[in-house]
Image (cartoon, rainbow, N blue to C red; front, top):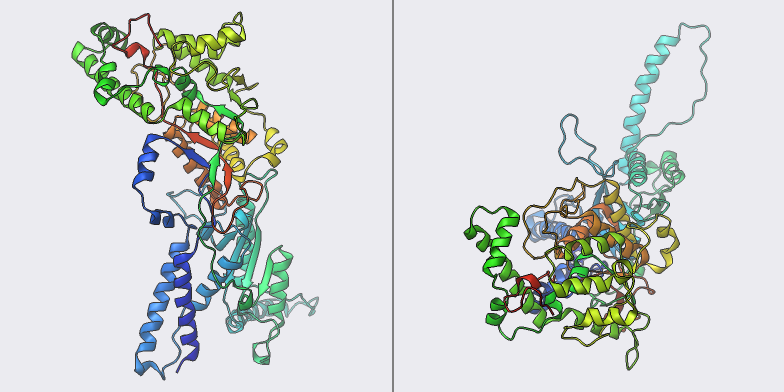
Length: 615
């Protein structure tokens, strides 16, 4: 009647129920995105959308469980199968994997991850095929532990031993025939040799672990390996299933450094309910904020400081290019006709109008003040400990861009004020504040921008990664590791910029001929080297990096995921990283990156200002 199949079917059914409610043990990356695009997306998405964020591989496991459950259901539903031999099923393996998911050290990073004996295997290559890799059933403990489940029985291993013995017998017969005539030949006791699929699996796991250390660890740390043998028994009650080489195999695996666990998980230790979904933590800024080039541009932009348009029509009318501007643009870019130059300027104007409308919906400086105020925990808020930092490269590029013909008079004045210690050393603190806030719709000192501190170098020293480990989140360590890896591959040569890019997702204003385009990285053409270096400084310090370059953030997150292998993009934070929570309510976590909408240099495009005016 197959009672064991009914039991397996019921266990598979239970897994399917639990998988539906299983909450992700990997949180989203601590990236705060307050851009208009994200705000619209959040408004439209349903609560069910969160269910799509789960452990990689969980869906594959669920589908495999469902397939086996359906096959068992069909077999057991047919009365004619009652007296047939039991159906061969993969259920014991699937059940064992699920139990590991529930009981392995959290957080679970991935299920059914394949690792190779090289860090970056070629996807397509001529000649011999690459190694198929080794499958790890559960990547646990934030990537620090690999778990492989094997359901081999004694009978299967004994069959391998018999096959191995037959090879040895044939080999010994050949040797005996060749040495029997030698007078010096005499028998000797040779050590017992063993070779089987478990030992080969162990060697492959060790090799893969050596080639795939846990990303972000310094010095590189190899993942620990657990091999769970659910049905192998070195001391069976049936003497026909006994062979000393089973115990020797287990000892050999342990000698390799593999943690060998025998038998299935104790069912009494399996939690009655699976981990539930938790609300995502509330992201907050660090008191020290790292600013990339796109934010420096936004801080001096006319769009950030000018009065807000009252309507769409007013925003569009504000940025109608004058005939003199079109003629200047045509001459500078070498556009063949006035019509072509005008068409490009119209597109540029529409983009600026869109940015002005976004500013009306969420002002940059107001957003910065509100978020910084929320972390003080004081009333009235005290922003005395707030500091803003940037790289020398971002400062220099900002000044070169704004102080060219692109920046208007007000924008140039604000840029000089931001970095007065570098370009206007005679200005006192009061003069700097007055110069920056003059003509702004915000009062003087609205946020404590000054002084903007500049890092000692464009790229942080490598030793900083080990010095500041305690103060950084796991994601920041992964981000720093990824940034350094990208930069180590070098940059593509920068070409002179001949056509101005439209203001858009990247937020970088580099549309001036004398200024070469920022060099892109060889690893990813969507990432400029200066953006990666800015992100690296924030990650190395454990500070929030603020950027208006949304496309670059998406690109760097993909790189973190790809290069991180099993380490994950976002990790379940430790108690130090996420505040204590009640039930399933989210706590707080420091944002590693804050993405806002870009604000381009726009003053020279204003149709309602004179060429010498400015906010």
